[in-house]
Each structure stands twice: as C-alpha cells, then as structure tokens.
Image 1 (cartoon, rainbow, N blue to C red):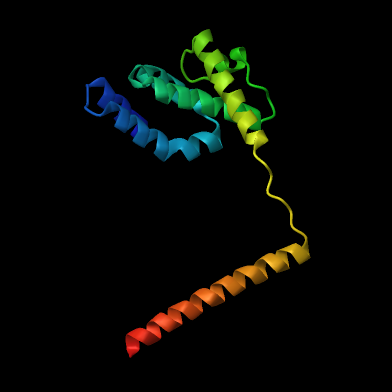
Image 2: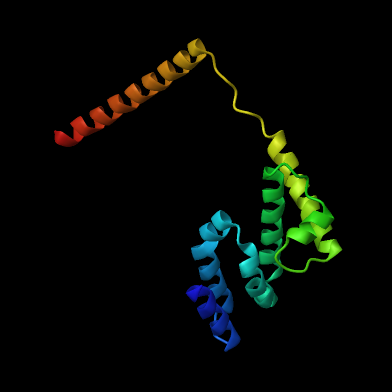
Length: 149
C-alpha cells in the first residue's frame, strides 16, 4: 500500500509523467492484484487517474477485460464489459471494443493449425535438413582452407 500512497500523492500534487508513475505502479503490482483478486482496493485509485489515460490505453484495458472474460468461458457483452471495466465506459466504446475483439478471435481461429507429420515424413524432413547443413559446413570448410593457405 505504500506504493499506492506514493503514486496517489505524486499525482495529487501534480507530478510530471503521471502516466509513467501509474504504469510503473500497475506493472509492479499486477501479479499481486491478479493473485489476490483485490481489484476493488485499487478501483478508487484507478478511477481517479483514468482521466490521464489516452484512448489507446483505454482500448487495451478493455480488450484485456474481454480476453479475461473469454478465458473464463464468458462471451463478452456490452453490459458485462461495462461492469468489469475499471472506469466508466460508454456503450459505443464497449461495442467497438467487442467488435474488434470478435474480429481478433475470428482471425485467430482462421489461422491454420500446424500440420501433424507422421514419423516417416518427419524423418524425411530432418534428413533433408541434415544434408543441407552438411553441404553448408562443407562450403565453410572449403573457404576456411583457402584462408589458411
């Protein structure tokens, strides 16, 4: 809590680089926040400094909330996102973030899964790679021999 008090006072008295102070604090305490689940203790602090966040930081925060909801098995919706966000979110902002999150999920799903090779195919591939490497070593040895002469 000492770091929280320091950050709050630094912002309150008008310290320069307020965003940097916030980021350092959040990064240093992120694991504790996640492990303990005590986001409510930090909520008052976060709401006082949200005015210093730019649109990209807000989007990234909301996107992370959507990702955590999806990992928990919930489908992100406007109401849930607005409720879980650590700051006030307009309906339009929530819709835009959810739309982009869904597009991201679709792109991830469309990526082809790496093909599973059978043992024989894998052996053939590895043998070809070994022969390429042996040829490369032979070329290097020949060049080295020319340098020694």
